Image (tube, rainbow, N blue to C red; front, top):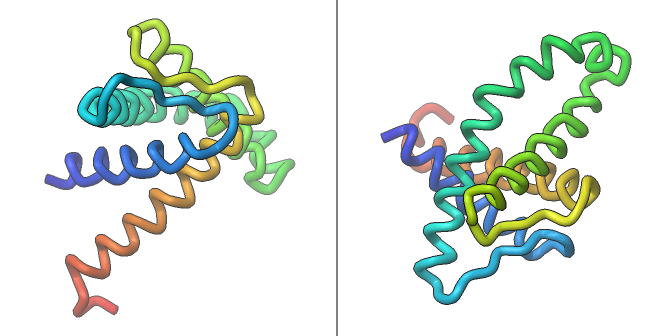
Length: 128
């Protein structure tokens, strides 16, 4: 259940990024767009699951030197890679360049954090 909720939150966050210039979600109808968002969200989760720990390990010094700001660059690159992989899988999702990916990844992080916080408060109101 938690995994499904995480995917839905990521899906909503990726949908928000499609309002940014340079991030496109095309599709013929609402159903195809929702399925594309679902696939991209799962793909983004897998990319983060596999590559983010490797990037953190290899870029440990850069994380320390930039006080963690290098993580924003890594997130942008992973979002851009997700766009590339979506294209390879013939998913109608595309990110035009690094800066669109950078801002998209930042928005995904912020929206995901906010939605997860809201869900946590609704699910467990007594813990506040």
